[in-house]
Image (tube, rainbow, N blue to C red; front, side):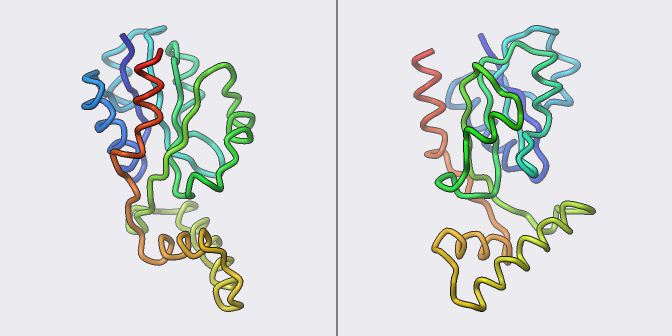
Length: 166
C-alpha cells in the first residue's frame, strides 16, 4: 500500500496531501519526516510545490522511493499549465502526473521567491493598466495582490478516481 509524501512551502501542498490521505485512509508524511519513517524503495505518491516549473523535492523522492504517481501544486490555474512541459522539465516519465492549483501566501515568501513574485506581479499590472488582461490573468493578479488559497477537496477528484482504478 502506498503512502503520501509531500514537500510544501506555504502549506497548500501539505493541505492537499492531508486531505487526500484522509479520503484514501492512508498515511501522509512530510518529505522531512518520511526520511525517518519510510525505507528506501517504499511505494509513495509524491506531492511537491511548483517553483519555476520545478517540482520541489521530486528528484530526491524519485531516487529514494518507488513512486506510483506525482502531483505538482502551483499557483497557476490548471487550464493554463502545460502538463507535458512540466513532465519533460522534471523528467517525470511513465508515472501518472497531476497538477493542482494551490495558492499564494505573500507573507510566507522570502528571498528569491519574493522577488520572483514581484516581477510576475509587475508584468501582470502592466497588462492590467493597458486593459489587456485575460480572465485567467485577472485571477492571477488578484492572487498576487491579495494572496489566498485555491485548495479545495473537489480538486482532488482526478487523483481519487485514478487511485480507485490503480
